[in-house]
Length: 340
Ligand SMILES: Nc1nc2c(c(=O)[nH]1)N[C@H]1C(S)=C(S)[C@@H](COP(=O)(O)O)O[C@H]1N2
Ligand SMILES: [Mo]
Image 1 (cartoon, rainbow, N blue to C red):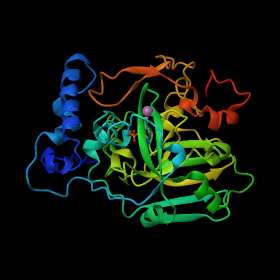
Image 2: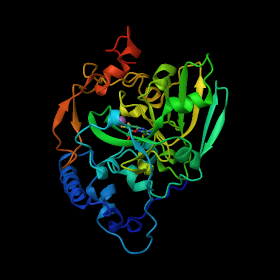
Image 3: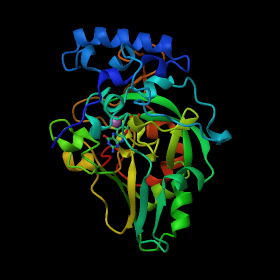
Image 4: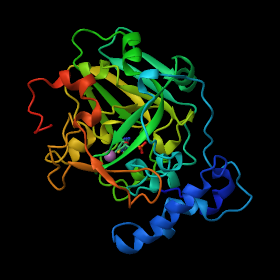
């Protein structure tokens, strides 16, 4: 299988400077250069996504993925999170193994990714199975903005202004049958566009397509969001365009990107990270400062704010990532230290 690489020269500095991110971006470039010298498993800066800022020519002006402005209302219940993670970091420091395992790989290798046409199928135990197209995703539902905390299982975190609609809105419209117990989500499988799916080495040994799951009660919780944008605009491919899940009380790997299928089922789905490492990653994967990962502590996290991404101050991890009031009742009687 031929793997397509995005040429450095196709990505142009000025295309990314439109929103006063220039200063912040320089900090991050400098920071990564230093980190490459001291942390051996980080790729040298010359091979990182941040090359997209350092050179380019006037050709291929459209090579960079274009995000469009979205109209939305601010959900006043979720507006008071500070400080927000700067936009350039939200769109450059990513996990999306379909495009590679490095933090810069998703942005670097996804700029040509096609999100339109798209089709999202809702099937299984529903009264109204349906397929939504790209326009449906952006126009069919009222889009709201919510500022959510995001906590990766790797012990870093961000605060992100998402745009989207609740998963419950979509599920209610599809009509969930009473025997449905779980919701299974699947990411697009397209190895021609996703270099990580074309090579087990590039894709971190994951068996694609990436799969995730929630119980019906979790899926119906008003916190569970289907996101179509962030920072006022449609999602970039690296963040899971055109539509991804956001479940802020769970580790980030539950928030599956670029979804093509949502299936209501009576069987617990085996999620991708659980399949890959059943001793390290579970189904529930609720953020819990006391339930350590077998190889590292989850008691604190590196919050990614202004400045060098690798030299951020640490903060305490919060139970359910700060959303205990909203979701704690879902896990009454469960052994939360086990967290599987
Ligand atoms: N399909 C797919 N979804 C995915 C991942 C992935 O590799 N593939 N990575 C997950 C992980 S580990 C995290 S932390 C979040 C990161 O989301 P962000 O890059 O938009 O911040 O996406 C999650 N969703
Ligand atoms: Mo993650």
